[in-house]
Length: 177
Image (cartoon, rainbow, N blue to C red; front, side):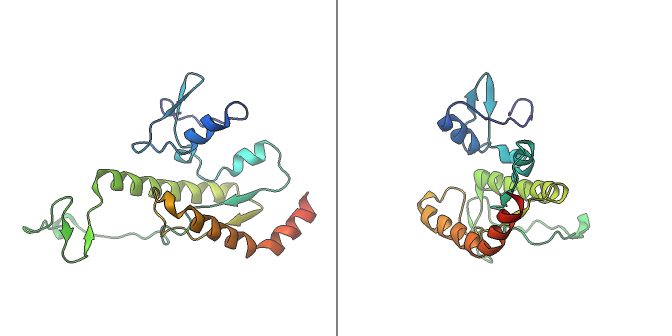
C-alpha cells in the first residue's frame, strides 16, 4: 500500500484487480485503487513472498526468484570525493556516451534500475531469513521490464529452470506433501 508501506495480501475479490496491482511499479504504472487503498507492486516490500505461503500453511514452498541474476555479489567500491571528476565533454542525459556506446537511461530507466537493486537486496535478506523448500531461478536478466513481446522467451526460460530441478521437486513433493 503506497500510502502506508504495509504489505497487503489479497485472498479474495477480483483477480484482474490483484494482477493489475501486482505489476503497478511505482513511477512506471499507476497504483490500483482497491478497498480504499492504493496498491502497487508487492515486490516493493516482498519480492519473493515465501512468508505469505508459510502463513497459509502450505506444505511445500517453491520460490521463483525472477531477479537473482540481475546483479553479482555485493562489492564495496572505494573512492574519495577528490577522485570524482566531471568531464568537460561528458555526454548529457539522453546523449550517447562515445566510450560505452550506450544511451543514458533517462528518469524511468533509472527508476526501474533502482527498483531492481532494491528488489535484489530485499529478496536476498528475506530469503536468508525465511528460505523456501526449493528455489527456481530462471535467467531473465537480459529481458527488460517492459519487453512484453518476449513473454514466450521468458516462459520458456521458466520452464527450463523448472525442468532442470524436476527430480528434486518430485522428491520434495513426496516427502512434504
